[in-house]
Image (cartoon, rainbow, N blue to C red; front, side, top):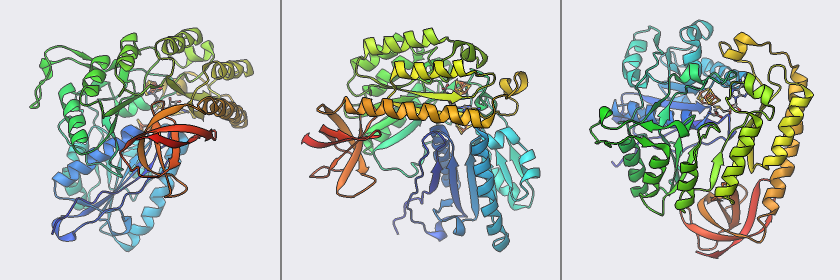
Amino acid sequence: MDTFLAINTKIHDENRQGEVFATSAHDDNLYKKLFYIESYGCAMNFADSEVVASILQTNGFGATNNFEEADLIFVNTCSIREKAEATVRKRLTEFRKLKKSNPGLLVGVLGCMAERLKAKFIEEEKLVDMVVGPDAYRTLPGLIEEAETGQKAVNVLLSRDETYADIAPIRLNSNGVNAFVSIMRGCNNMCSFCVVPFTRGRERSRDAVSILNECKVLFDDGYKEVTLLGQNVDSYHWIGSQNATEAGTYDEPVTFAMLLEKVALISPLLRVRFSTSHPKDITDKVLFTILKYNNICNYIHLPVQSGSSRILQLMNRTYTREWYIAKVNRIREILPDAGVSTDMITGFCTETEEDHEQSMSLMKYCKYDLAYMYFYSERPGTLAARRFTDDIPEEVKKRRLQEMVDLHRQNTLESMQRDIGKTCKVLIEGFSKKTTEDLQGRNDQNKVVVFAKGNSKKGDYVFVKITSCTSGTLIGTVVTT
Ligand code: SAM
Ligand code: SF4
Ligand code: F3S
């Protein structure tokens, strides 16, 4: 029988607030055990779940998208805000019930919460059998064996080198069009509010050759878009021959701008996106590389976090409001049509109404096409938790957040309205959310575009003339294919 590996994961993306389910098939006889993975958090966590699936598959495990039939349940967790952790704990209580009816079931916690809480997780959540940090996934088969003997298995060692470069990820929930490709791991930035440097460890870049090979394989398999992922992609730096892998290497150092160019050159039909850019690190070279290649999307996610220089300093973001504005101006000068998006935090320690107004005025100035907005959530162990008091009442944080969301909605509506009458190139990702009569995809600036299906299909590039819009979607008709 021709089997394909059953792939199943459920994604709860903190930053995208999406939920995706995959369908799958499996043949019980082929596998030692069946595993089920549920992913929470950012795209990097999702990409990691694909690495985990690959490691488990190579070691004889099969996947199921039905957790009730699984022998192993893995939850790939996020610690970025308190709410993200609370969601995981709530989910674990549901798995606790399953353990009562299936005592052989093993539950493993992966990812950032595993790293943050370490063995304490097992004390707090008795049903958990394995706690595995983001750099320890290669040891999963051994940890499963250990847990099968009834022992609790923990590996939360962080690495200075691990990039999983040689592991071919199994594409989870794939639409066959877009794929994530991790180009680096960890973060050295130490923003005072952020738990990531503690849960993901030191920053390290992945071998450029293995990145290019992965992108080429994706393109050969029919994928049309890759998103290069890192917490701070602009500090990507591959040193060359010193770290040669079997796949070969480059003699000269590879910067992010060089990597972007190499990926863009795979084929003009392969779209290239990337995330996230840190305002202090994005260079003109990157901007000119975007300008040079039509298949590198005109879209930059450039999180600012606050519009107040005083708050930015407390956040340890290493730039001021003015410096950030100059960066946005430079982007608009070199790439006048670029979509720009941001992340914002309201109610950080000591934030006054005046600081908040500065965030609002910065948003008005930048006219972001997309913004992910959060209220501050103190994370244990971070610089801010140790140095500052979380002194803004929750209702104030939430009220400021709501004001920001309202402002942003107005901004995006205006940005969408400016596109009416224009024609844009869209990569089709599937049916629209509302009907199978319509298709949807994204344009160069990352805006969602919906249009009548006609003869087009998923994976095609089409030109769409925009006729109307909502604050989140452009609506149009295909003019040429
Ligand atoms: N590396 C990216 C950068 O530097 O902008 C961001 C990574 S983080 C996974 C995604 C976003 O979560 C951040 O940009 C920030 O807005 C938000 N975030 C991080 N820590 C937070 C906290 N303690 N409370 C609220 N939001 C937080
Ligand atoms: Fe967190 Fe700052 Fe690193 Fe982004 S750059 S992951 S916000 S420490
Ligand atoms: Fe969450 Fe870890 Fe990503 S804390 S946002 S899953 S890097």
